[in-house]
Length: 139
View 1 (cartoon, one colour):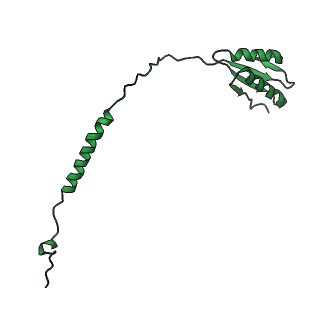
View 2 (cartoon, helix red, strand yellow; view 1 turned 120 degrees about the vertical axis):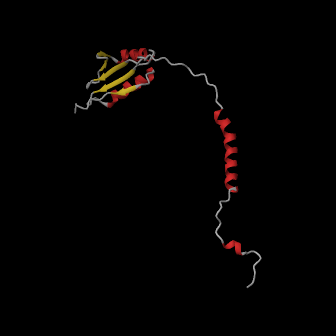
View 3 (tube, one colour; view 1 turned 90 degrees about the horizontal axis):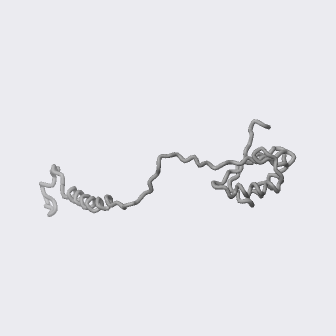
């Protein structure tokens, strides 16, 4: 039998011990990582935050109800107005603080031209919040 220089009779046995060197190396690396990152995590930036009160604010903007009838006439909060008075009311509402919301309720049989004119007048007057009111019960 030829003897191999790299083999011995003792290599045939099963190794019963765990090699602890890689485990210790990994634990030391983790320890260093945690030692470096913990001061960074605990570093805090001082911020001066505003204090809020617990009182509810009921500053809801007013709403203006504008209706366009079938014949093209306009109602401002239930009162009939002509187009000259409408422009003045829109300008006055636009300068109010907070600015009111314009709720537009148009008859379904009214020509779209009247609705477009009212929306254009509201935009020129400075009202930016326009909502359309619909009645699903009417058909």
